[in-house]
Length: 249
Image (cartoon, rainbow, N blue to C red; front, side, top):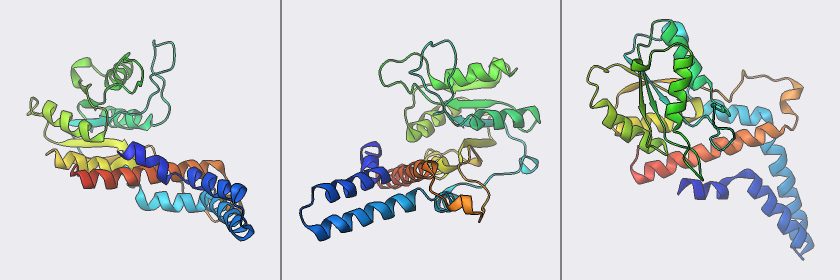
């Protein structure tokens, strides 16, 4: 549901609709008003300062490494690779490598003892491998022993991540103190889903879209990346609302 509704709340769709009305409207007043609206939307959603401020309000803030305690396992949510790209002899990380690199750093620091990776295949056409399996191989390549990496390879969304991970953890009673690792903008929904599934895990946000607040002139100039950030944010907020309505949180 959230994936379908997403296109209705995408800023670029609003801009295109406003421009279409301006082109096809016969009433001069409506044509002019639509052009003004389209221009206003473009200026608003391409402003990097405004997109950064909005993301700062939504993202889970970073936790200093020194303040992280001891954990039996870090639960890593997948969703960071392109499984359609050929050849299928490696992992193609699109964005979100911090979801793996930061808990790996905690493992090297002795703060995380093992890993639980959750995520099935992101392929829309054919299943080549699960993302969990790919991340496991990545951690093994970094020197983590295979017996310290558990995988859940059936889930296709955040709700299923939590539900299937809960089933996996029921077979691992020794894993009591858990760290939940995902992108900062995705943490609110993830925490809600895992709590609903009965998993009490401390959040550890990674993959930040925000930057330090700056008031320099370049931070107010139109930037296409700001439009992308707004689309990510609005999609996540919509997903959170849909999950709440569905009782997933």
